[in-house]
Image (tube, rainbow, N blue to C red; front, side, top):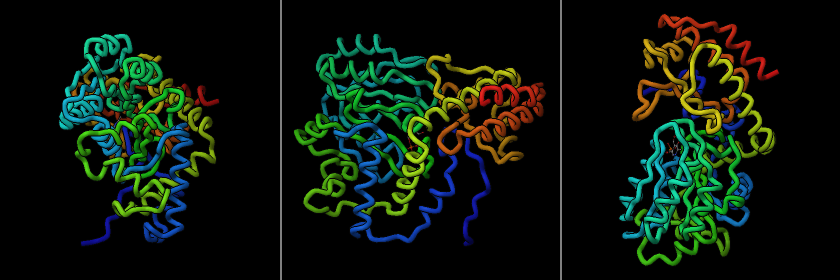
Length: 390
Ligand SMILES: Cc1ncc(COP(=O)(O)O)c(C=O)c1O
């Protein structure tokens, strides 16, 4: 065996995004014990920073020791017991994953499905809630990474309250890129991941749980089916009050990385970070359109951090991705499910949301399209992007 030396890459796919040198340096700091008093101080600081980032001062906020899917699994397995009703909104791949998990939890699942590329429609969801009888959980994805669509979290959480359900909100791609306001939404279980707009490596899943959700977990008649993510056990480790009980060994260096990514984010300022995502998206959109390409998603629902661009007729989707990777070290994403071969997914997440990334991507894309016989003007595209950044 030899040491692994990863190639240089510029990450503009659906995640992971570029990790800043500061976060990489933090990851390489010496490992200390997870019960070391100084590490426990770090855990407390991370909890506080996550509560600030989610705007969830009254929620319990902790990072789960596994990627975004663990947040999804924790929310579903903790809040649902066998036989309880879950209404799951599906407008892309990740809503579908939630429905599968709820089914595995033994819940009765009502799926409310929408075309890929459209947001979740609250009026349709309300009809489903009315028809479903008592509902324990309403779950949806705020920022659907498979399509690049934002759904209206405030309205959907309000519907959950109106019908006496707990809300589960997937903010894996939204947190740190667009406003996530857990307090204003009055949401119950909100989870994210570190590898998107937080620009830390994959492997951790911040989650926020309301007091209502915590009470529902305490009142369960059956044990949570997933030991690692059982919130009551987890909080005996992360809770801090009355000392910590060993539960698992925290991924110590990964938590250094998350901590540093939060320091970096708050140094720039949450609002400034969101403005940067919005501006770079506008620049990329202007450039993409100048190349003669079109977006899948209507402007009103587009995510700045995940741009879904339609592959023009006669162009080989995979060949374009292979070209930009080989010639420019640039990773962009493919379509999933029904969008496979039909779209590219271009991420502008966290440290990858800069004017430099936009210019590089437009130039590389134009070259790759040219190689496929699709004529476009890269200079005009970069000029259109620059005009938005001026
Ligand atoms: C919206 C959404 N939810 C959940 C996940 C799962 O996260 P992970 O791949 O980190 O487990 C992803 C990953 O892309 C996602 O985009």
